[in-house]
Image (tube, rainbow, N blue to C red; front, side):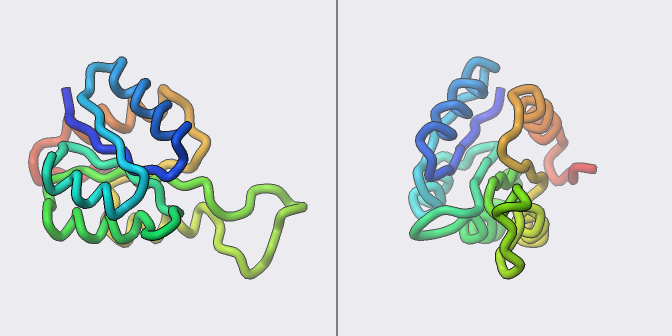
Amino acid sequence: MAQILVIDDEPDVRESMHEVLSRSGHAVRTAPNALDGIGMCRALQPDLLITDIIMPESHGFEAITQIRNDFPHVRIIAISGGGNFWPADYQPESVTTTAYLAAASRFGADAVLAKPFDRATLLALVDKLVSLPQGGRPN
């Protein structure tokens, strides 16, 4: 199975993803922020990186850019729950989750997922990306 690095500032998200991916046979490591994640990625050189976008200190765009430049073979999934979801929370000047994920694709993410997502969706996307041949691009 694949070696996967998960970067997310929310402990519950990291732990949940670790459990789901580990139970599916993957070797999973986690990091609480982009800076730690970039360092771990350099040491581990995982098959797949899953990174949140909106995090304190450093954001997922930094991780995507650095990893894409240093390790072009690493598959990247960007995740985000940022922005506003409910009409009562609408703020015209805020950036929506869709915009964050679209930007992540432009920064080099192979795929994106909006939080919350279910276990089956995550596993299907992970399986799709890790099964691609070296240099292959997802559809």
